[in-house]
Amino acid sequence: MTSIVDDVFGDLLAEAVSQNSGAAIVLAPGATYTFYHSAALESDSLAPHTNTVTVIGEDQYGRDATDDDDETVTFDDVAPLIRVTKTANPTHVPETGGDVTFTFLVENIGPEGRHSHHAGRRRLRRP
Image 1 (cartoon, helix red, strand yellow):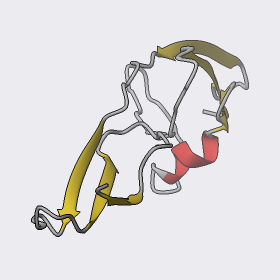
Image 2 (tube, one colour):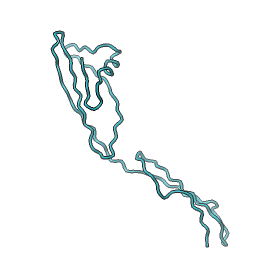
Image 3 (cartoon, helix red, strand yellow):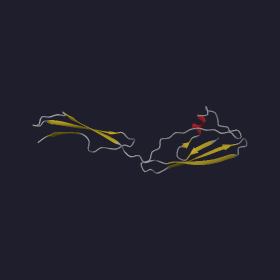
């Protein structure tokens, strides 16, 4: 193989050769070669990711052989997931009243990032 180029990830020949212990990739008739490329993909718009790889090889006479293939990765919508824990300190006050501090712990327990605009500490006094 003399060229492996992905239209999104760029030139992958060095990566393929590296995974072949640094040796040139030479395929005998009927032989195959597999290599791997990992990439982190994300899409808030949920638009699919499609990319095409083009591979060029040449025979001993310098004649090129070329092929390409594409692949599409789709994204699944992930809903945010939060958990709220409310505590009071103290949890008992006399009937005549007393100061109580409420604490609100909001945790993002899902894979989606979200902001809470209503969390925090509040000091309440009973009238």
